[in-house]
Amino acid sequence: MAELLVLRPGGSRPPLFCFPPASGLAWQFAALKRHLPEDVPLYGLQSPRLSRDTALPETMDELATEYAGLIGRTAPEGPVSLLGWSFGGAVAHKAAVLLAAEGREIGLLGMLDTPLEVPGGADDVAALLAEMGYRVPDGRMSVADAVAFLRGLGDGVAVLADEQIGRVVESYLDSDRMMARAGYDVFPGDVLFVDATVPEPGFTGRASGRWRPHVAGELRAVAVECRHSELLDARALEIVGPLLARLM
Image (tube, rainbow, N blue to C red; front, side, top):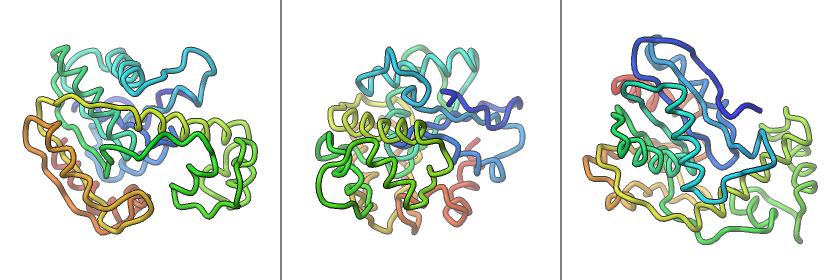
C-alpha cells in the first residue's frame, strides 16, 4: 500500500495533506472530495508500516520528519494545508512545526479530535483493541489472532488481504507506542480543532483544551455531535466538510 495516496491530483489552490489515524490508512479522506473546492489537490499520507518492513520510524518525531519530507517533495513550493484525524492530528502538528521552521506557509492546520496523550503504549494486541472499543476475548492475542478477529467482525479493514490487515494491526501498535512517548513543541500559527462530543472509550469529547499550550495563534474549537470514530462519516462531514472548504 502506497505511502502517498493521490486522492485528487492537480488544482490551483494549496494542496491538503491528510494524516491518518492509528490504522495508518488514509482512504477515508477521499470523502472530503465532495465538500472541498474542485481546485484543491487532495493527498492522503499512509503509515510506512503498510508498505515496507525496514527503516521504519520508531518515534513520532521520526514519522513527522518522514511525512514532512514527502510533503516537500510532492509540493515543493507555496503554502500547504494539513489535516490529521486522531493520532494523525498529533503527527500533523509536529509536521507543521517542522515545515514552518523551514519557512513553509501552513495555510491550515486541522486536528480532528486528537488526544494530547494516551495512558501508555500497549504491547498486547488484545488490550489495544479493547481500548479501541472492541469486545475482545479474554487473554493475550497475537497479530494473527487479531487479523482473524477483525475479519470475523466484518470490520472495514476486512476488504484487505490478511497480510495487509496484519500491517494495519502493527500500525495501531506503532501509533500507540509513539503517542505514549511523544512531546510537543508550539506551532506558530492557528489551529482548527474538531471535538467529537459523543464519548466513546478513550475519548472524552474535550480534547481541544489540552492543546492550548502548543498553539501560538488561535485555537478554534468546533464541537460536532458524533463519536470520535464517526468524524469522517457522511453525517459528520456535512459539518466538517464545509468548514474546511471555507478555510481552503
